[in-house]
Image (tube, rainbow, N blue to C red):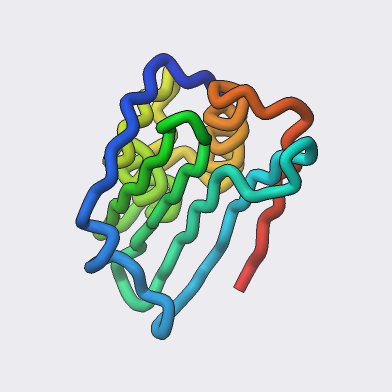
Amino acid sequence: MQNQVIAFTPRESDKIRTHRKEKTGLYREYVLLDPSEEKAVITLRIYWPGSVAYACVWVHGGAGRYARGAGRAGGGGYCKASAAAGAALADAGVRLEGDIDGRGLEAIGGAVRALGEWLGVKGGILHVAHA
C-alpha cells in the first residue's frame, strides 16, 4: 500500500518502556536501511504476547530527527498489528496521509517506506523479519 507522510514532528515517548515485549512475543520487525549511510533509519517492532498487539518504533533520521513511539491494539475483527503500528508511528510524531490502522501488514511496510522518503532516504531497503 502506497502512503505518504504529511507531517513529522519528532517525539520521544516514554510509553515505549511498557510496550516493549522482547521476552514474550516478537511477532514481526520492519527495518528500513539507508544504503548510502549503511545504517538502519527506522526500526518498527510488533510484539504479540497474547490477545493484545504492541508496537514500538525508533527513528534515527539525523539532524535532530530522532523519535520513538509505542502503541497497542486489542479487541478483534481487524488487523491488530497494523493498528498498533499506526498508533506507534503517531506517538512518535508521524502523520500519514492514509490511515494504516486495521489495514493489514502491507500497510505497515508502506508507512515505513513513506517515512523513509520523508527523511530523504534514497533507495531504502525494507527488511521484514518474521518471528
